[in-house]
Image (cartoon, rainbow, N blue to C red; front, side, top):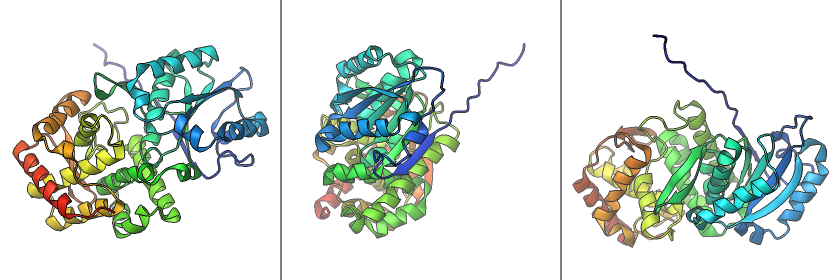
Length: 384
């Protein structure tokens, strides 16, 4: 019998960094759109409600930008505010409403959706774009540190269901991602800080130099030092993008999730607190827990574990949360993590800075001991 055919795809992933993207003479955004000159291409804009409130003149700026660059851009046909935060993904009526906007404005596969918002809005609108007509071109403009440093350059789109994060979704490469670093100036300190945990994570996994920069200058970074923050966010985003493009498994077909260090418990903690914990805060807690587990298992030396926990605390993250008191309930997150991907349980841990390792079993007694040790450490560790 003949060999089964293989389908190979080559999908461009455009990522741009800029400031003041809607200044009329800034071409960063206009350059990522493509006009075919034959069809009536359109663009529908979706904006996180929080961004609308933080920048009341945003719609006017966008309209002025499209007017000033009309020859290079599709026709702007709509502007829709979308509820932000995890509520955006928890209520499926938000998805249905936005799909209705796509239908109302006749957005087809050659037209575009421009989504401006935090990770949850990017997820929900991205899922709508991925499923409408089996795929509409999506341009993302992340507005949070977390989304610019990590999820905004990813290929995942989803909403929550059955009390589980990202239960339904789709992998779809965005047409482009434009990171406007000035949009981060609208964030409060907690929201701004939240995304730094993903930069710590990717440094621990893939770039010891980035982690050491963050560790050495954690105090300045936690205080929002501008030039330093821009550097860290861009380096983090490029590391995430490089993994997706060159890591060999962009759509997670295997059992490993090599960028999800600290995430199994982070996701569970979000659920246990009814999402009072932000994703980045959950990841920071998850990193502290898994690092302590690695230390107790003899995988990571005590000094490295101490340095990582100290870095997280200096950045302003809590190292422990009362939701971690119930070890059995938290450890159920391991089973949910495995089920979400399928196959064998695979958890990414570290053996040193920049030295990831995948394990297929977690010693639950040791993990419970790690929770106890982390509680003691957190009680003795000042935050900030």
